[in-house]
Image (cartoon, rainbow, N blue to C red; front, side, top):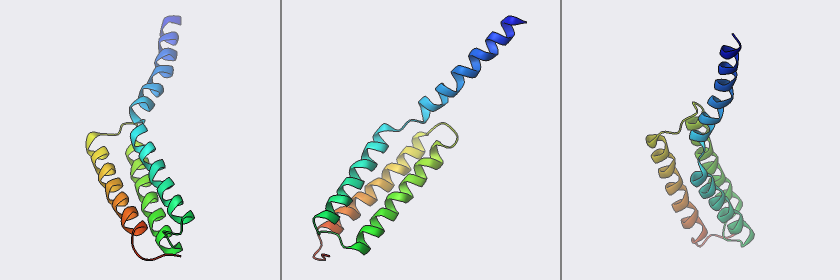
Length: 105
């Protein structure tokens, strides 16, 4: 009986850490941080006006929601990673375009 209890306790401790290990997305998180930093720099440098910054922040939030949804089951599949990566690519292009257009604050 003790052996069964110890086995169950061991499994209970190991399974959550295994699930979270598969759901970690350090590259996605780092890229999100870099893009948010680019937006902040554009605001500070006057390259982005308030409307552009709001739109770009909304796009960043969309990518965050995609990531949260992908992580919700504990595993981020290759297909989900591709979808998130494409959304980040799209947002990155929008950041570059908005920072280099002729509009300013």
